[in-house]
Length: 319
Figure (spheres, rainbow, N blue to C red):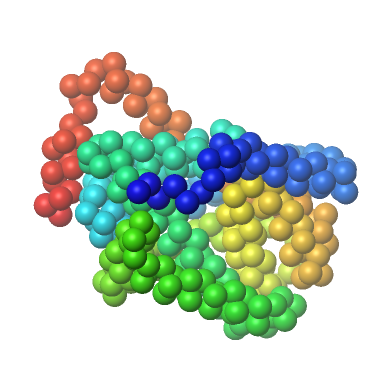
């Protein structure tokens, strides 16, 4: 039975449009509330120095994400090469940042990987689990920050801990599912083996630290005066909020969540919106290497002899 068979057909058909509408509604509400001033300020404040910093900081984030994807793929029996995974991740980041929906790049990455290994379903699952484990690790880091760091956001630690515990219970329940969802349990058992889980956590930590650093570049660009402890906690909230799947090429919930958390931290919601816009610009520009990957793909399609995916995948299977 298909893994999507439990989702009503109408919902599956409407979901892409709902994602876009949701992001557009959030952006429209922000413009209605704050006007266009924060957007204009963000474009004016963004400098070439901040763009270069974002480009450089996104390199370790992309390498770490590609590493996590390789670990997940190998655990599920669909290995990836280092070069192929890094190129695919840069490509997917660029497509996510430039196409509506914010996840079309990941969809392309999933389908292409599945076709390369001759098992579309498992290839898609590897990409989904890559994203899920990355978001789970990022959320866990946020909970730790809320609990440990002495900030105005500390009061939200109890519900955050409860939420994380709820996710853990859900994962435990899914790991024991049988029938049509049995593959979820098999995948979870494979991914929670200590060697695999340790690598996934390490890769996610590196990627999150790099993304937090890009956020701090945006904060410095806007000129926010606050302590590093508070800014790290705020950055983690913004990153987790950016994962809400209702956006327009990544825009929408990220800006709303950042404006809200800046207000809760006593830094001003309008300032938070400006920081989020600068961060969005920096994050989008930092994916430009993905455009080079797409250009290289075009060359390979015109000259297929230069591509050796079969040999590379065999090397990956041998480790």
